[in-house]
Image 1: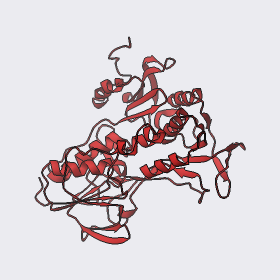
Image 2: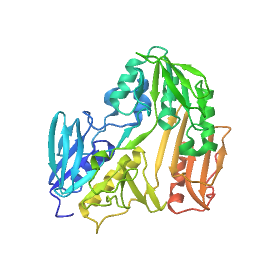
Image 3: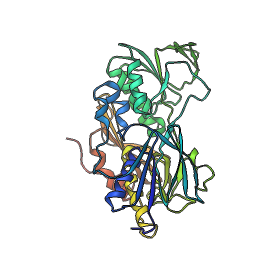
Image 4: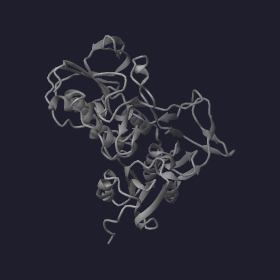
Length: 403
């Protein structure tokens, strides 16, 4: 362990920050530890916000993260980092209405990401984004018995929200400017499958269109689309993705480029004694040979652990984080599971099963190498995860066939 660390600050109390703080203590750090969290809630699991908490299947307390071990720390809730001075190694924090300055000799940046707001300015009441547990509870309270809901955005947030609300009886229109749902994440070939899935379950899917504006002064009543159509709405949910929360790092010398740019150990470029993890971090991935910023729950959790360990041991003992990313999404009766990073793929093919039955595994190739595997059979992709880590040729050899 580095003997230089006496005051460590973790900025961000989501899964990456919480796991980093727990790891610092479990790995033997006994100095001052401060955890700064923008929300007033204890750390909680974010995936259920679009799913079981939104539908009411689980209660609010059911999404709290159970700490793996109790650890002592000063925890500032409802507090945000607003600036940093690397020369004096201090962080400016707004703690409620009170300004506060925190000294540090070790820093974990886990400030996450902020939801993208509507780009053209103010919106009527009834137009909302879903990012936090408070957002989710407000949306639940606004839903009528059979509300007309319009969801803007065909990524994972938008599609999960549309599936959840449709499953409990709401009339949902899902609008995406892309050619297919989930196109940015899965490509148009696989994205078309989820477009069809939503339509089969009654979602009014509109792809290849933009929202030109909202109708309604005091409260939203409808949306005008770029194809000249109009969609009535009681509630509009915006799912346009997120931006890494890095404004507070301006002028610090820490390199920012679509997140905090890090090496393969999580060390932030442009600073010493600073690591980053989670949605805010753009780590160099040894397998993919590029900087990746990945907004996945499992990735944030494991990255928080690695960043904390590497902060403690210092650069000479730091280990690379080279885990193959994993993501899942539950939509209607289909569990989408993805390992790897399909971005920039040049070919995709089904290697097991049949898309017609809904049970299949597809592989993504890039320059002759398998870079990602997508599956709808629970757990199957995990059996192929090791092939990606080993840089398997494309297409990967079938391990087994479905029975």
